[in-house]
Structures are given as C-alpha cells and as structure tokens.
Amino acid sequence: MELLNKSLRELGNLIRKKELKPSELLETLLKRIEETEEKLNAYITVTEEEARKRVEVADRELEKLSEDEIPELFGIPISIKDNINVEGVRMTCASKILKDFISPYDATVVKRLRERGAIFIGKNNLDEFAMGSSTETSYFGPTRNPWDLERVPGGSSGGSAAAVSARSALASLGSDTGGSIRQPASFCGVVGLKPTYGRVSRYGLTAFASSLDQIGPITKNVEDAALLMNIISGQDSKDATSAKVPVPDFLSSINGEVKGLKAGLPKEYFVEGIEPEVKEKVFEAVKRLESLGIEFEEISLPHTAYAVETYYIIAPAEASSNLGRFDGVRYTYRAKDYKDLIDMYKKTRAEGFGDEVKRRIMIGTYTLSAGYYDAYYLKAQKVRTLIYRDFEESFKKVDFIVTPVSPTTAFKIGERTDDPIKMYLSDIFTIAVNLAGLPALSMPCGFDSSGLPIGIQFIGKAFDEETILKVGNALEKELKLNTLPPL
Ligand code: GLN
Image (cartoon, rainbow, N blue to C red; front, top):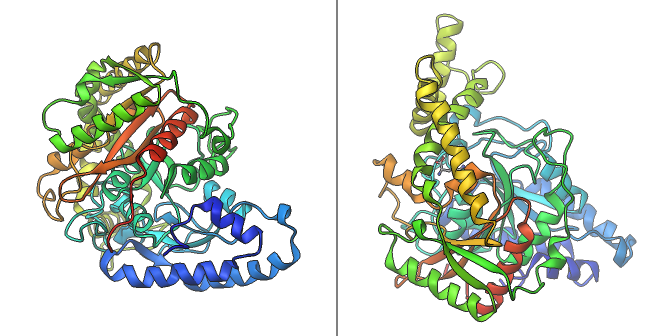
C-alpha cells in the first residue's frame, strides 16, 4: 500500500533512479485490484496481459536509458474511464449496445500519456454513456464506494474515483459533462479536475453532450492532477473545439503564492437543501484559506437557479443526436430478429440502451422537434449565456469561486434510482460550470460524522486552471487529511 500511496512524481522518480522496476509496480497494483474488485466493481476491463507485456519491455528499456532520457510516467499504469478509446481494448461505455466493441484507435489523451511512458491497466466503470450521478446505470453493475460499500461512489466517473480512492488505480482519466469528474471525486475523497472547455482534446472520447464534455484527471492529490494536466492539455488538430491557448507548467506553479488572491462565495450555493455538515466543512476550509492570506467576499450568481433545468434541455438534446450513431449497423450489438431495416434499428436500440439513456434520447428528441425547439432548446441556450455572464461579472472582482461540490455526501445504493429529479439535483453545484465552459477542481475538505468524505469546489476563470490547482495544493498541505479509505 505504501507504494500505491505515493504520488505519480515520486513513483516516476523511483523508476528513473532505477530503484523501482515498472514490473514491480504493476504487480503490486494488480494485487490490489484483485483484492478490491470483488467489493468495488470499479473496472469493466482489466488489461492485465497487455500491461504485463508492456512492462516487460519497459523493464528492459529502463536498463538502457539514462535518468534524463526517461519520461515522467515511464512504466506507470494509468486507468481510463470506459468511454475513452484505448487502441485494441474493449470500450463499452457501460452499455449493452457496445459491450463487445474494440477501440480501433487511441484517444488523443491516451496517445499523449503513452508518449510520456504511461501504460494502461484497464477501463473504469461508469454510468451508461456517462449519464448519471451514481454509477448505478452501468450494464456491468454498480460500483461501490470504498468508504462505505453500501453507498454509491458518485458518477458518472464512479469507477475511476472509487479505484483511485481504494488505490486500485494510481490515477485515472474521467469525463465531465455536468459534474462527472468532480462529484464522484468528492464522494470518494479524491481530487478531480474538470478543465476549461477546449483545454483538453475530446478526440476519442465518446460524445455525450459535445458542447459540455471535457476529459480530466482523477487523482489522489492535487500534484498528480497538475502533472497529468501538463501532459493531456493543448490544442489537437483532431478536435476542432480544442483551443489554441498556451499550456503553462501546472506542476511548477502549484507551489506558488496564494496570499492576496481574491475568492468569491456565491450566496446561491449555500442555501437550504445542503447538508449542514457539508456547509460546515466547506466554511472551515474557507477559514483555513483565509489564514493563508486569501480574501473572501460574497458574490451572486443569480442564474444558477436555472442551471439544472438548462442542462437537462441542452445535454439530452446533444445526446439524442450523438447517440444516433449506435444503430446496429456500424457497431457491435444488433438485435437478433427483425423484419426490415427500420425494425432492426428499433429493436437494436430498444434492447441495447438502458432506461436512463432512453429517457435522455426521448427528452432530447422532443426538445429539438419542430414546434418545441424555440420553446425549449433556444431558450435554454439563452439562459446558458446568462449563466456565463454571471460568472464573467464575478470574475471582474474575484480570482476564483468557492462552493461545495455536492449538497450531500455519498448516498445509499438504490436510494435515488426511482427518482431521476433527485438524482439530477446531486449535480446542482457542478452543472453551471460546464454550461459556462469554466475549469473547476474538486478536492476533499473533511469528513461527515459517518466518516464519509466531503468535497470543496474551486471554480476558475477560463483557462486559469493554474490558480485553482495552486489553491487546492495549498489547502491540501494545510489540511493534511488522511484520504485512505478503510478497505
Ligand atoms: N450527472 C450528470 C448527468 O447525468 C452529469 C454527467 C456527466 O457529467 N457526464 O448528466
């Protein structure tokens, strides 16, 4: 466990100094996966054989390379949410419709990690097509929270967060459309960063809602998130929405000065409905940040009140279009008995998709249909602009914004499955960030009285991940929480 608890940089250094062999690290990790998977179900696929082959080569190469020729992730196994393509590996999106689909290529983020020496250990469980907040809609069964096996790990990147928390993954990449990196990170007591829209290439990420989706790191600590951001960020010719903005060295700036920074506390984010203990711990963290010289002031984000409704128009609309490609012709699953082509489409989709995905496709198709488009979709786009402007106004006064990640800690498995609205509300504090395209960091700031982790969110200006990572790193050092679950 001591080894698996180390940061990516520490592991990289041990390998570089040839004090640790990639094969030793892999075997330790595989053992931990074996120990925990029966309880957690955090992986859909573990690519044990492929990883063993790769480390064997890495072990040999290591002998020949000098210390400074060895890239920072050399021989380090990383896990990937199962809606991101890793060449030659099954990518299911936790759906029956893709259950046997083999990725023909690497996503850009995967390619970039590979170039820095990473190897891939497997694909993490998620809500089907990343639609959910609990990892319960997976065709492969729910993932459990390592802090309490009766509870959900959050979602949709629940497998990634649970694995990193249980140390059955050293680090993982997730995706965040409305909170899917940050909310599970918060439920599992780990760090999750949703980058600015356009910061990280989406090429190779299965599209859910293309104007909202971003890939980002889920890690044990802030430093690891900064390290992964250094590698995965930057423009990519394969994703037209990836931005041509210079990528700073996030790792070297995390230790920078936080004194004198101005932070905003949006009054709309601390209202009723939020568990008192969550509020308490977030305010305690605020006090600690104040003691480091950060100045706080109250701000207002009035259109936040409409964020969930706006999201549940825009995201399903985009999803209904994006998921049109899963028709039984080009991808694996196809219904057995059908009369003609239309019947084949219908049966394939009826059998292949789960209930939540169907619900989204139906809502999206409805809101985009003639006669309703103006009333719903167009209106939602206008509200989206207002939400963005709220942030723009606030960022004239403050450098970053502090909120809870979710109104509650991890809830019980099954508790919200029959009540989609209640499920949707667990993202009430994360969704506006996606609608505005901003970066946000989720990190642990304490525990509730049952010992469940509580998360704090730092929202940054567009393309200013540096500030929120720096503040996160300062808070982490200040709090020194023990984030290892008793598993
Ligand atoms: N929970 C939200 C949803 O169900 C967000 C999901 C996500 O970020 N992928 O859509």
